[in-house]
Amino acid sequence: MPAGTGVGTVMTTLNKILAIGGVILLLGGLALGFRSVSADATSCGSVFQPARGITPMACDNRLNNSATLVTVLMVIGGLAVAGAITLKVVRDRVDAV
Image (cartoon, rainbow, N blue to C red):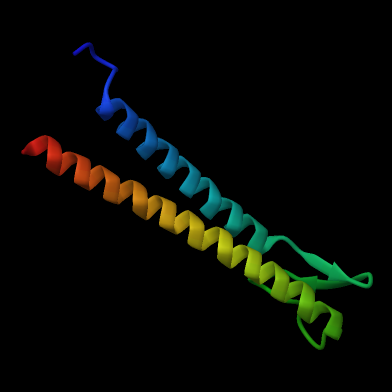
């Protein structure tokens, strides 16, 4: 079989896509966590560092929505990276047999 064809190439490509996509999602979630949100011209701070003192109740919903988005992105990114690692381990064990 010529080099660069077959199931091994497909698995390697899938592994790279999962790993790169997972890292991008993790970094994107992290970046969104530090992004400042505002409500009614009042700075609410960010998910990782809310504004100090008493903030308007409008900030609660904005911060909760941002926190949900950050959590979803980071969980999906973590699952993609874990899937890539699992795929790599399984592929290496099958190749070793």
